[in-house]
Length: 204
Image (tube, rainbow, N blue to C red; front, side, top):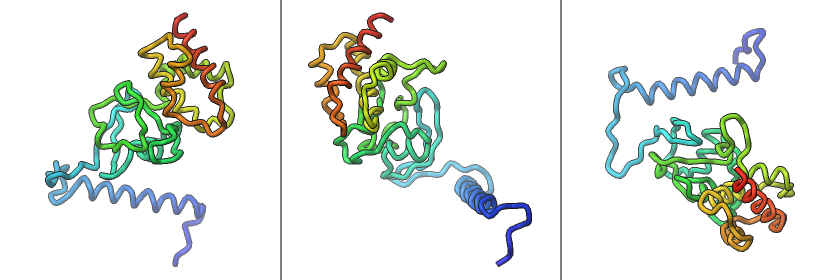
């Protein structure tokens, strides 16, 4: 086996090999037969791998497998790691995102089913200037979580609640968040933050 070129570290050399393979694979996928970009005809009941999603207000092209979940796509294809994978079986709520404004467990939603819909993850809740939304700000002000692994799911769900009911009772907030679990058991502080966020919404 030949040595790597002088002046190039082993790590850099390996990265270049991987990048070259990715480019070759992409080219072979897009340019088939005649050497021009072809519109491939899908077999019946098949799912297109190259799709475009609308995530946090942006159009994001992505290559997804038929069985791929939205949580996997967001984290590992689009780099939106705020969406956490906890149970991966639609029980803990750590992976909650908004789809057309409604909370969903992204670990149980197939990515190809959300084409044409608006997906909002925790990264998309703040405005473009970086100003936090009321729930995010309330969590910062109230130190509502301990380990905070579950925080993105709670924040997304609470945001959906306040979008439709800006003045919930504590009981209504608890019911709305009942699909989210906190490993640290910090439910009282979390509810305190939701009620604080409700005040912020009403003042704005």
